[in-house]
View 1: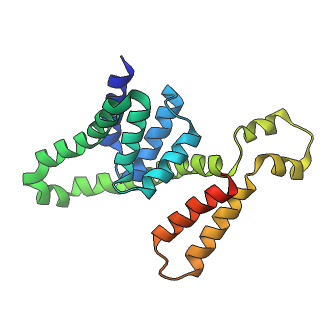
View 2: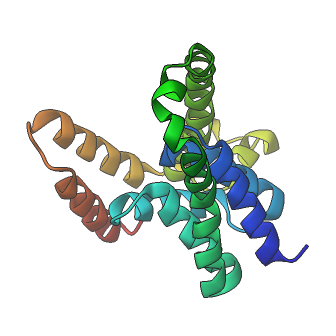
View 3: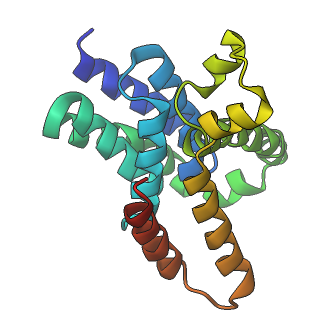
Length: 198
């Protein structure tokens, strides 16, 4: 199967099973990264930052980005359409029965079971991204190599202190300044990334 058709298949599956919105696509993207090598975890964290900062749903933005990077403009369009197609098909099928469907006991039980699973998947994927943003690449390999640098040496070599400083500043701003618009945080984090060379 060519990369293009594989891309369409993977994003169709993602659109079909990513229950819970854009962030629920992250575990599927992480799996694509591991299985096909279309992008790295570091690239995924960049995609999320860009997708969250640009207009439009995060899942659609990431599908477009991955598709474009993998198979050019046709890949971007195809991945985006493949991601949204399952939702459109399902809504068209159940539109006439939506009220009954929504109130059905079995449906409520299914979604009650799905919620904790979605949270777990998203948290696991976010942990990978969190680590890739705050630690230098291959920092875990250094643990297994047992370099005799001690705890402070390991921290100096592995922890991205600039990223942690920026995270602390943004967290302080978000908690300390009431009614701070998210656009301000996005602009500050972008400027901080440029100034700190992240």
